[in-house]
Length: 102
Image (cartoon, rainbow, N blue to C red; front, side):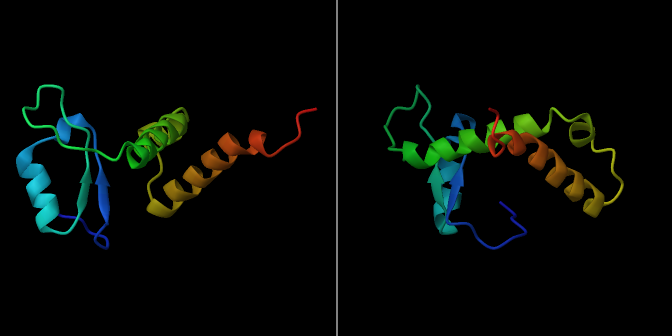
């Protein structure tokens, strides 16, 4: 996998990436695969489901941010403008959790 950033310590992926070739490639590059095994896998491979839970949190965050049409369709022309609107969308999403509702 060509990754343009610093080498990660682990890769969180869903069952669709549960293949021996993918796992071997990640391990050869020193990346720990955190991928749950498919139900039809012959040999059981353990998975750290505590760390795998973080993947679900990330997926839900992207789902919430995509409720903003501008983020989902990427109307912004520059990366700075898009990143700025992502910040505004995240603030709007998380602000009610920090404000006293009583």
